[in-house]
Image (cartoon, rainbow, N blue to C red; front, side, top):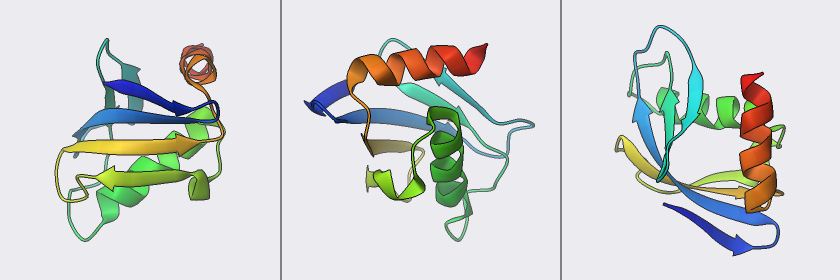
Length: 96
């Protein structure tokens, strides 16, 4: 579920698919699906998630936080610096 926490941050539930052939962000109706190449060990996957989200949404890495699920495939991310509309629009623009 995507939650607007303030006018400048978004909390979003994420499903991570590690060991993928490619990286991608896919916005489903209820969550963000993130495919990453890294294995889920020693924090490698979490680092790649933050790096990928930062790159695709054009937000500094320091503005992205894993709030819940550091050792799980299901996570809750807080992204500061974007409101909900900007979040969705930036994801749509990244597809093109």
